[in-house]
Image 1 (tube, rainbow, N blue to C red):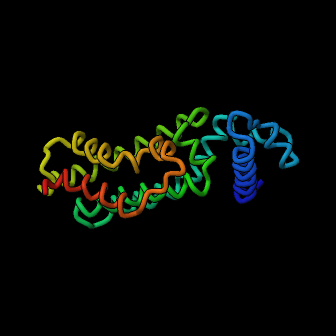
Image 2 (tube, rainbow, N blue to C red):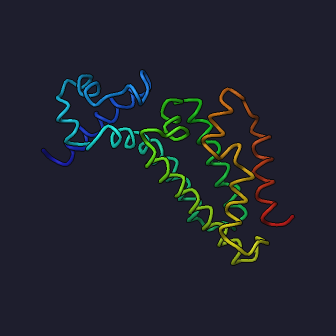
Length: 196
């Protein structure tokens, strides 16, 4: 089978698994159910994904990849650290809020990882790493007043947690938060590092 055929089959399996997760949840989803939905054997699904957990994590990864590309672009951009931090936190908060609203079952894989715990932890470590990169840049340019990178990154994350922690976003659930309120909280987090 060509690489295009492999990727096409893999994408079909991921789509079917995402549909199963949306309809019956990740705990009840099974490799056999995904295979049946696709009219293939469960052995064929296992050819592409070593386990149910690997399949569920891959579904979450597909959703996270789009978010992470946008975040990486912000971190790698030429903007000053305070602008980067504000854009980073705002982008993350919007992505989580939109994900929770538009595709709650998949977002829940991040907020309540269960089967997808490794992928959720990997994403959260990347977010922490990016915050540390922004903090390091802000400290090295003397834009941020704190001197310890990890502490600065944690402070920013803690201050914006209501909007940037997937568990908090899930708990808020139907609580519609105005963009102005979210943006004020994020600006406050940035000001705490800039010291103004």
